[in-house]
Length: 443
Ligand SMILES: [Zn+2]
Image (cartoon, rainbow, N blue to C red):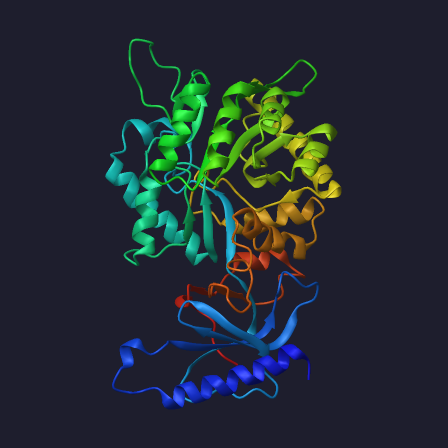
């Protein structure tokens, strides 16, 4: 008997005796015990899946995981039978916008969301977005700014944590930061004051103050836009306008790190991306045009890469228009950047920018692009489990099914290691030990 099996046997005995001795007069304080039978279990720490496992959940945590063969499930506990399914840890989405609802020009694009939607309406829809993430198996999200909805994400997170609305665990960034000329809304008459989708700063003093304000009001991370407009030059190469100076981004990373928090930088390529890296940012968002030198620096500094591929691979503007050329240049460079970063062993996390496209679309559409561009299905799963858990300083707590972790458990039919699109068919979701969705029938 392996040590782990021995511990598991001891755990079962102690659980059985604890249940036998529990006083029926005090049911409200009795621990809630659930046992999940997993036909196949994908542990992202291992290379091969396990079969015929049982997972013991007590309240919101995983208590034990072990072989079903030979183990006795105590009587009177709730058993969830996922023998016909593949069970995985709850997934982590590292780049969402719950306060955005797509940018379809036919529906008013980005601007209408800031100009015509009352904040309460946006919050109501953000509530639905949070639910959408959870029902697709994403039990944790890093939400990458509210796009003009202020500290709304902190409010949604509060409501989720209090159990008032269903939703994933949320890491907030609140308002995000860019410079004058570095973010929409734009293109209006200069006499008219319009809202901005971020907090605008100019100079390192304002930069540091914005980071302090946002963290003071509940930002778990700080989001910074290090590039803004992009176009293709006469050779078809992608060019991006930098925003913050090195001095400005350094003020933000210095302040944020001293609070024990991290900085995510939206950066396409070029000078803005270089300043993000030189300024010590913790994650590069999008990174469409990473040079070999950028990649080497990311490796050296341990910078995370959240590529968000799918959103750049569709709905291009018509060919032979400036926007159409730009869209194609972006996608072509992005594919190369991803492949090079993957080869070099840069730490990659799964993210989609959902909200930039409609929340009605499947989040899992990103996985097939990662696999198509060379990532193994197991590494794609890791990019949405153990990798972001480490980025979020939550290793051992989320992204795995192991003793001590939060009981975030999902299941899909079939084998996602053979067909990665299977992650788009999540039929069972448990979050913090509570079953949120259960559409899988037993054997
Ligand atoms: Zn985004």
